[in-house]
Image 1 (cartoon, rainbow, N blue to C red):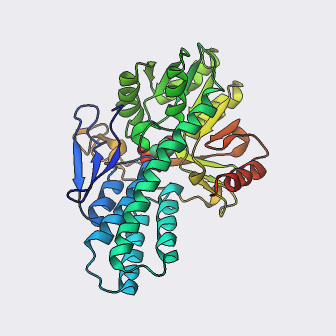
Image 2: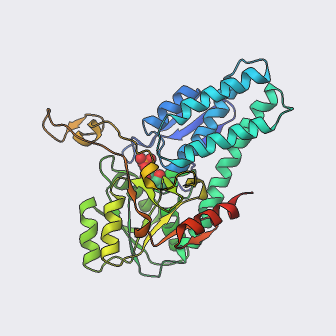
Image 3: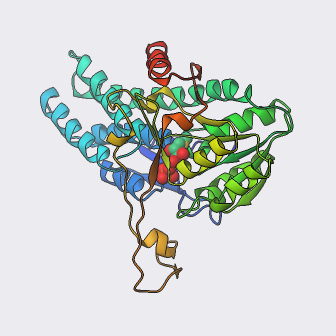
Length: 354
Ligand code: MRU
C-alpha cells in the first residue's frame, strides 16, 4: 500500500484504476473503470470512499466522460460534461469534496474559452491529475501540523478510515498518526470498528498493520469508557463537510465520540483539507446526510450473513453532525484552526486559495 495509490490512471487504456475497498482486508483487488456510469456506481457502492478520494475519483470520471465523448463542437462537449457532472454529483450527497472537485473542474473548462474539443479533453485529464497530486501534498502538510499536537507515548482514538484509502495517498487524520510514527513518536491507536460498514476494522486496521503502528480494535460503544479511564490523549477524526460555523459532518458515531471526549476533557481534533469546508452552509442543520440501505445494518457484506431477524427494520444514516462547540481544533493544510471557527475557517480558505 505504501507505494500504491487508492485512485490512479492508466493512460494506455485509458481507464481509472481503483482499489476495491469492499473486499479488503480479505482480498486486495484492483478495478479498472472506463465509463462515467461505472465511476458513479463505484462511488455509490463504496468501491472507493472517503471524502478526498471520491472528489479526485469524480474528477477522473469527468476526464473519462470527456475522452469517450463524440461531441464535435465545444458547446456540445460542454453540455455533455455538465450532464456527466450532474450524474457524478448525485452519487453521494454528504462529502463536500465531491462537488468541490466537479465544480472546480467545470470552471477550468469554461475558463479555457479558446480550446477546441481535443484540447478540452486534455485539460480534463490534466486537471484530474493535478487534483490527485495536490491531494497528496495537502495530506502531507496536514500531517505535519497535526503531528505537532501529539506527544511521544500518546494513545489516540480514531473513527472510520481516514488513511491512504480515504484519499489518493497518505491520509488525513490517519496521516497525522503516520507522520508522528515516521518521526519516531510512539503512538498507540484505539481503532473504532465503525459500524455498519466496518471501515475501522477492515481498512484502518489493515493500514496501521502495514505501517507498523501499534493499535487495538475496539467496538464503537467502548470509546467513552476508555476515555473515562484516562487512557486516551486525543480523538482524531476526518470530516466530510464543515459548515461556516464549524459544525462537522462525519461518519456516523462521530457525534457520540465528541460528546464523550468533551465530558472527559480529551481534545477532539478534526483533520481535513480546506476543500471540505463549505462556507455556503451556515450550520450543520443545512448539511444533507446520506441515508444508506438498511441491509448494511441488518446483515454483513451485502446480505451474506443476517445479523437480525429477517423481518427486522433498520435505519442507516451514514453520517452525523458534531456541533462546533465540541471541536477543539481543525487541522488543515494551512495550519491548525482554533475557535472562533467562523473566523478561522474563512481565513483558512482565503489562505488556501491560489
Ligand atoms: O462512508 P465513508 O467511508 O465514505 O465515510 C468516510 C468518512 O466519514 C471519513 O471520516 C471522511 O470522509 C474523511 S476521510 C479523509
